[in-house]
Amino acid sequence: MVHFKLDLKSGVPFHRQIVDQIRCGIASGRLLPGEQLPTVRDLAVQLEINPNTVRKAYSDLELLGTLDTQQGTGTFVSDQQIEIGDAEKQRMLGQICDELVARGHQYNLTLTDIIVYLQGRTNHETQE
Image 1 (tube, rainbow, N blue to C red):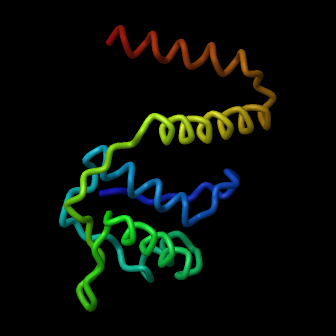
Image 2: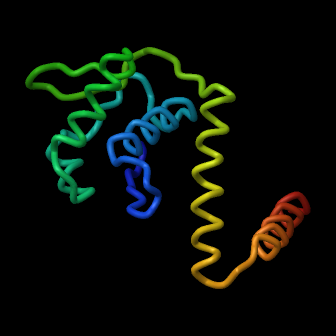
């Protein structure tokens, strides 16, 4: 299951963030075929956003064949396999890095500070 979370400061539209989280959840195996997603209303309440935003995300994914909505039953992950392409990975990585650098600057951290820290984490993980 995916724990949905919106980044209010990223500049990425909320419906796009929901779409990305569902697609990544499927690609990574955290969302499995046949798994039921929260209702539009429940997810909107959880994320504190307009239900139309969730409806748009679900609708976009339904048009792509990623989700199946069954009237009266709910919205489910389809059997369609998702593979995140290189261009999509680069777009997502760019978003993550932009956000990281922007937040770092809020705390007076330089890009060098961030890189050194990340390299230290990587070195630590490889030693375990």
